[in-house]
Length: 142
Image 1 (cartoon, helix red, strand yellow):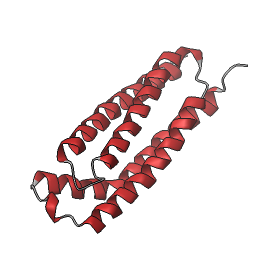
Image 2 (spheres, one colour):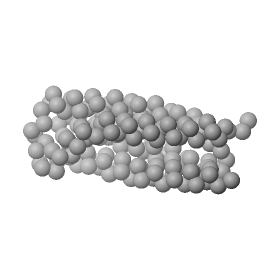
Image 3 (cartoon, one colour):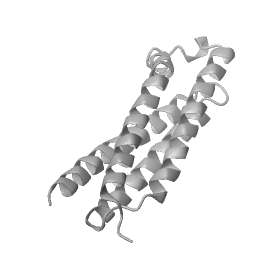
């Protein structure tokens, strides 16, 4: 059975939109920690506030994990199989970065671990964007 191109494109589009929306929801929490690290004020973040932020991150990451499952189950058209695999790997790395960021906040704020998780997410995001752009180009070229 041949993969349904319309279904595939719609699913990828939904995943990208949902990922962006979840990221926007979590961004204020991320910015709060980022600013505290940049200003060397992580000690001023109460345990209660840190736990609230971790909860927001965990909820968002749970949604990302569900999308990870969706991505793994997709059947891409043959002409984008390779780039789909690159997209899938990058998305998995992005989610790992989110999990590492949560871990960096488990007992206080581990700035080095937080920074490493952020760098991992940034690198994965760049590859995801490249993959989407490449897939779009390949799928629109008939």
